[in-house]
Image (cartoon, rainbow, N blue to C red):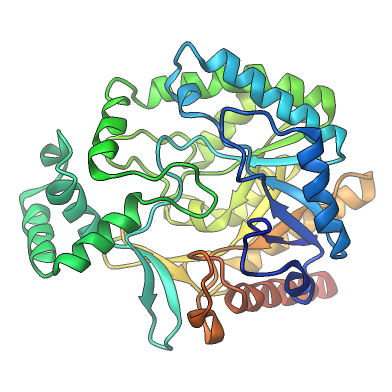
Length: 390
């Protein structure tokens, strides 16, 4: 498999020269500076690609070309925005880049309540705490309709949690949830966030799926024409949040997407951490079942807590994901591609722990140097053992 590394562009504090020393050969990145409603020009793509190749690496996967909120909401502007999206795909293909990871999560990308949760060994991890999330939803955001979604006991526990936070603690919780994530265009205040959520009040899972289908029917034929493989990323966490529907959370959801527009251009990103939050997702089985349609993999593991809605990022080979079984299935798929002349399967370590000097570097949450280096080394070791023993 091709070992890749997510890089956030020239402003990323982790330099490409350092990435090359991790053992990664491919870069996963995007033109984050381009607004979501504008075309990525051939000139800008070539310039970024040249920077990557000058460091002895290749631009292997685009993560991501963001889908505009107007497309997810099915607004009249979506046709023009989809046309813009397709033009970006054509330009990427013209520059020799053929794999695009994207998601269809409304409003929020991956969501956590704590970006620096201390593990027993002193490492810092990302965590989603259901009680903290309920405290935010009920008493800080005060989302209309939220009261009906929680039991009396949950409300009491959330109130007690909030009462235990001082003002800086409350601000930290708000900022962690809505201030914006690495590579994201949107950065919200509480007031603006309430307004944005209200725009989805009439959009349930069925309607969001209709809007995803509309997007796929317009984009996938263009991607197939120019030789782009589209790889949709699952929801994170894989369930509805804040009244927002989620439609890429289960194996059945993945199958629906593939069936909606059957095409070699329509595929999946297997993110073991996102899908793995749900106990009913069998990751090894999904890797085998969807193998030919998996065009990109994020390999990480999450650990469900006593309340299974709460979880934290585990070490790459621990947690609830049977990473060895997943890699065994992916190696089988990679060997099939080798026999048939198919493309390599890119993988990257994801959401590493902040360890050692990572705790003193100003890196993006979940994207440290040493934590991901450790994860990549572990994943490469498992892959090497699987290949040797199979």
